[in-house]
Length: 508
View: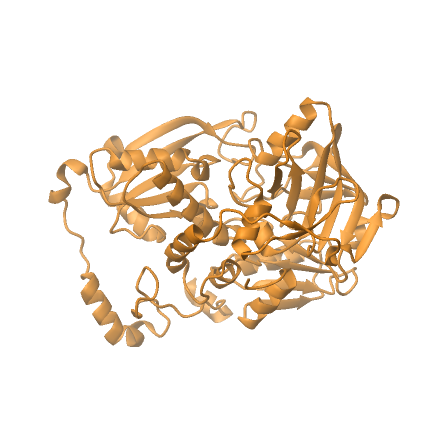
């Protein structure tokens, strides 16, 4: 177990030199803009906000918690100081070694019970809830949220990450996209005419948040997966009104019921596509029965912005590994790489590399990548490349697309695929379906042996020259100097550091 709870995790992040403290920021868009500044750079720092304007000192917000390779590696029990490319094969190997499930354990008490506030005294205005984006329709306390919902027809407890806005001092709205597990469960309750019990957690163990944000299979509790990630059970306490399990080390949680027909205005909200993809509308609202919070609580903020952002960092790694795994499970042989690119919010642009074995192999890989569970929701483009292309390098992928793909021969369209209200490219009055374009950017099977050779030094020459001259030409930490069997790429990278203002000016 690398850490105990969110606070211990942040202490270790600080030890890595990747935590910044900001005092006196304004909740009204300033915290959001600072967060965007931190997470809109690869491996940007985590940021803790304290002494927020108009609020008590100690009532804090932390953002960009998992927005670097080292912080994600720390959570997952992998070596820090490596690149995303180096972490992918390490995580693929480790993910096969961890248990399939470690169920949570119920405990009598925990820090979340430091303060238990009954319905009559609930006042959500004590928390420094930001207005994250300029055009948001409200203040969203739930961006790094974990939502606990039980299946009405089975013992299954599902955890999801759905946005939640403060409607007033005692109520929050909860938006869940169509097709998501939480939405399906809500529809089941409403079809019976029943209220749905819900717990919303606004700050929690990063493993619980990560598990809740991934495509864990239907019927599998994310609590079990979070326990597997940590190697020990997640301790939970029972909600006094709903009976739902609440993480015992959580920072802030509310519980209550969402009832059919009870709604409040929700949105617009800047979403992960980089757009305000839907307007304000009525959404179900939860009236808080009990409020729980630790002394000096921390809200976890993961507001989406135009990519890259925090969610495109850690989710890119985990979703790529899941995509790779599901393709192999579907019978696609010799998949050599997969990546869910940051520019597409880790959903809209998928790249897969294969070692071609037979005619149609690339088309098979593209179709499975586009339609397996890890790739199906709100996708757009899938590019399949040969195994000499680095799928994590967008320049390399686009180079292969431009030089090996003939549109008439190698592009195909999938119609009426799974979309949702957050898709900015489709008719706002018909958000149910979208289309997918798949590209075969491999060397054409029929004449692959006649395809022109690539103009570049051999791997052996490249490594030898980089070892001898790379430090002089490119400087230390350039990512080219080979290490002793260090990672799948055989390269060693210096620990990522946020760029200075001078660096940013140079890059422009």
